[in-house]
Image 1 (cartoon, rainbow, N blue to C red):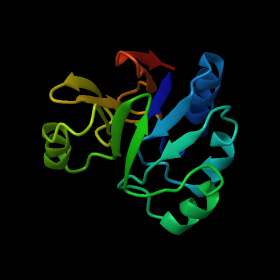
Image 2 (cartoon, one colour):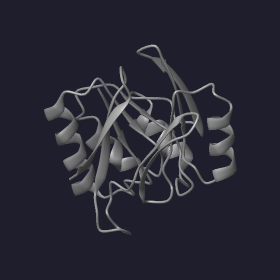
Image 3 (tube, one colour):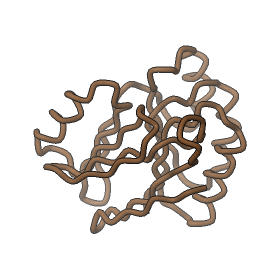
Length: 160
């Protein structure tokens, strides 16, 4: 089981709620699709009991500080390609929707994980495209994450 989140925007209570939920569910991995924002958030993600992968988002301006703060958990970059559970996943923040569509049309990836819009969106085209919405809840008022079952690609939207 994979926990998916994005756009936490250094909202510490929301990050803590997501970490607590993922720990309770005993997920195998947590993927963050960008906009961590501040290096001090790393202390809160270190409470995860599972591995953590993250990428940069468009609002992650202090990249060197983030890279240093997160280096014990993951290597931050703009794009990640992950192979696990006989699935191929791409993680991109999603500021370029045409690029997301191209990744899907390539038929290389079973799942594309993105963020940026703060809206939950799960669509199946050539790939399953998952935007878990915003963990922070700043724009929509909803703090959301997604649970993905990699064996059958079933998924659940979780309101924290």
